Image (cartoon, rainbow, N blue to C red; front, side):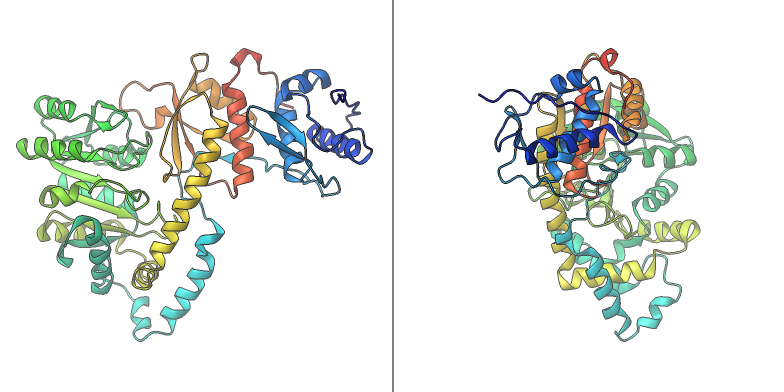
Amino acid sequence: MMKAWSPTIGFGNGPKYLAIVEALARDVRGGVLAEGARLPPQRVLAKQLHVDLTTVTRAFNEARRVGLIDATVGRGSFVRRSARPSAGLRQPYPPASVDFSMNMPPQPPEARLAERMQAGLAALAGSPGFLDRLHYQDSAGVLSDRAAAAEWLGRRLGPVPVQRIVVAGGAQTALAAILAVALKPGDSLCVPALTYPGLRMAAERRGVRLVAVAGDADGVIPEAFRECCQRAGPRALYLVPTLDNPTTATLPARRREQIVEVARSHGVAIIEDDAYGALPLDAPAPIAALAGDITWHIATLSKCVSPSLRIAFVAAPGTGEAVRLSAELRTISMMAPPLAAALASHWLAQGELDEIVSAIRTENGLRQAIAREAFAGLSVQSQSSGHHLWLTLPEAWQRAGLGAHARQLGVSVIASDAFAVGPAPEAIRVSLGAAPDRETLRYGLSLLAMLLTQPPGSISTVV
């Protein structure tokens, strides 16, 4: 049996993790390490070399990237068959930071976003009437864009008259305008106890009082919503019913029906923020499909295509509400970006938007699989089609301390305080879409997992 690898490394002025990789490459070339040889556990090697565990984790990630080693959960790390020690090391690698804070869809090559944008805009520029798109537009959106939106939304909502459709410059703009139309300063708005921060900001600016509604792993509890109605007399209920932000909960069909029953019995409107509704293939029917006459339904393209496409489609409860919403949008933003709206309509007509969403859905599944592997044994709520997860911290950790340690490692996450309406649980949201590729994602998650699987007091200064 080959003796365990025990390198002697003279750390110079360069990054220590690269010195470990270079020593590994040298020993593979020199025959000290044979193909298939098992490497010491990272913690053992860190102690042996008198470096931080994070340094060894970075070294093993880089060694895997350049083809020196393979790693298998539960078995360890091994020198790769046909290892390629001559592959160049990144200087430096990984990137200085990994962003798990911004909840955006990944941009996989299969989506061909840059190519589609270029081709789509070229097609629009060559089409009749293109110059009209460069003028000011109706604040509700041009009729052709509203018709395209009505057809797309109709797949999940059922037939929606185009007169009820408004095109807005993103979901945040739509939310602010809906609050201005549907609620007065001082009104109460029922929200999940953990709620999208953008809604919280819009409500605060409007002077709307938020009332938390208890939930569980399936989302808002209908009886808790009923109690909220009886106690607070709200004007509306706000929900992200599918792939909730931040908890990832998806309301089951029966619970959606019960929520509609409670809302009708108490004269409460529903604001349905369906930002992620296009991603799952098996999501229940939207609430607007059950009660379109009392529901403001918002479907943004920022969370299922790209944040650069600042387009959201709103199905208002009625024509009068759509007219009032349009007037409010004119005050806030004048109109949705005309070229972005035209591009969205073009992609809808060509079937390309569905192809983009499909590619993102697939990439989300691959990234969620990496996260499941990294966070094995931890308390995580996730869904394979979404690009975020909700992680309850181990008992030893508190969110403030974790955030500080994570920042030292160059990893950013969002603590529960950003979402909590009331006491915040010891939990964080981890968004998987902003990492530029899966290798960067894997690296960042490995650092976060390393933090979470050991007591805070054992973490030394990061090298």
